[in-house]
Length: 227
Image (tube, rainbow, N blue to C red; front, side, top):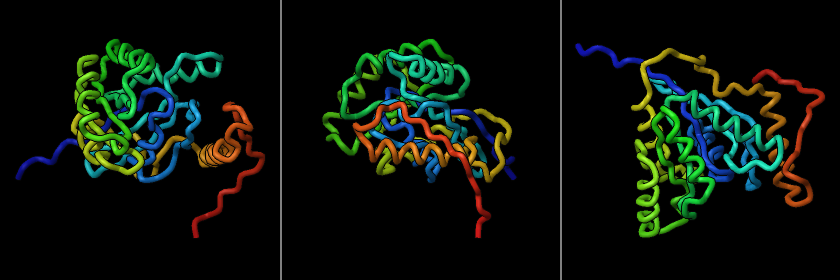
């Protein structure tokens, strides 16, 4: 009788420029919505943990704010949060868009990856929007920029390639403990999740009427028992 496979666990950072689909990917991996989504830049302001439970492993995903050149103090702190995550994880998902060539923001992230110790997957999102002949030169361009452990084309919105991405990440996780109970999917309290969902709707409905810096405060929050 062969010995049981060791339990694996580790942390995976999702990094990239704003609006490349990091939060969409996290929600897709978890099969539930814990991170809000908007086409406005810097929607994700803080570091959000999402826990993927597998029979023999636990993957803790760290959704970070988009990395960009900050103009304000809030933006600077958001970028610092994202960069700090690179030093604390076992694996990095570097998300880029299949529809765009590498820009200054992508090169900035790659330079930070070169300084870190964690292996990085190049995750090319939105492949459903381009034809394959256009995708291959993009892969080759990024391959010359950094030695990625894996290059994985996906569509976070449609779910294409996401299961393979999780399988590859699973294989890279070290042996480790169970960090979170099986019924825990995120470190965000329900009150915070509720406020973020409200902020998402405000950003979606108001469009240009309100600035990006929308804050939501909940005066009263009642969590009913499941029926």
